[in-house]
Image (cartoon, rainbow, N blue to C red; front, side, top):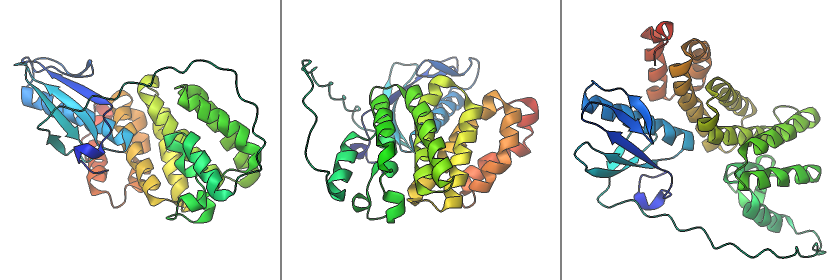
Length: 299
């Protein structure tokens, strides 16, 4: 996504706090302890926001609050580029007013919609991360039909359940439902079929969204590595989803290496295998391994 502020969603906005003692926090979480250099603390906080941008797969907004009381609205991109804005971040629109509860309407009796209409209906109800699973071929001209096809009809009930969980913010239930669908698809179609790979991709994306709360970075990293490897093996489309899975795997691995260096070291070779052509991220992995940080449990 472009770093044009008008193209970036108004939320989330991460708050960086810097103190004169060299302490830096991001949304209240301490990134550096006191006693260090303020500039180094600022860079460490921006690096943390960069990781969050990688997990979102796009630039994110931040506000850097300095020790003198000044505040700077920023855009932090996945590649670490920081843009200082000349105006505050936009205020998100208020949520819509609640709709009075009414009795549900009678089930529709209209005949099944043709493929294009089904794609439009699916797009209106799918979670954002599920676009490749529920979109029809007519809705994704950049994809071959097998990668853009709707799931078979017998899975529509389970998929609707997943969508409802995601819309309600119940990510754990949505992930469990995605896993259940994926297991059934694997048994029926195999692990590399587009149906199976698409649902795996959705499960991985939902898990990334939940990972800041769960903190299970070893499991998250392995899932993202599995997803990226499976997408490569299956030659999945679109390519942008393959690239996003790899970026997310690297971002989760960076979290992992700060809490479980031994496991991060074990997974580094798999990650490097995916980073062919991504010099910046590959160098980050190689330098960390070569530094011996893994042996000392350091990030």
